[in-house]
Image (tube, rainbow, N blue to C red):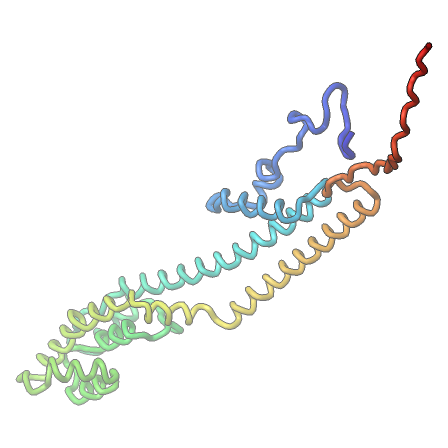
Length: 281
């Protein structure tokens, strides 16, 4: 009879009807560990891998393995969450950039200022990239803008934009300053803005957005959480190893094959010759 097998009535605990439920099917485990959007098959595969590696026997060893399982799963969840946070931040910024529209064309700066105060949200702290730069420049243009002020504004746009505007809408091509101002605004709104927005999906641009979100503080926070989980895993491994060792010392373990009982050696000597039966004369 194997150690650890008990009989209850006519059934053995090893009988199929008395086996404990799978941990993954038990509500106490499945409902507290997995979220609805997480992959159950992946979780079960990880659990099977840990069971094959550590071969838990008994409630305490099962609990230690399950602790390792949940900690490893939570480490993966931390990384997935950071990826989702980064993606959400990038998409939110991209949505704002794609939906933002330049201001209409006004005759005076006073009309422009009134419209901004009534309709434009506060953008303090927003990272100024190419899109926001072009939007701000376009919103600053109005019909009675002084030509010299526009030249200064164009020169402050940076080499890429200033070179383009000076080449495509030079001042000398327009008889009046208001006509030149309107031409500059059309070029910005209809040419430069669509071009820059088309470049937003490039790998370089996406990497820059991700780098702006993944700060050093966020990286350190993730590392601290993973260190705590690694500590829990290490303690679970020590607890599991100590439990197995104590069972082995006490002779209660079934992890190793039982040794065959020793059989005393039989020494076989030379066979004695049988005496021949005497013949009666």
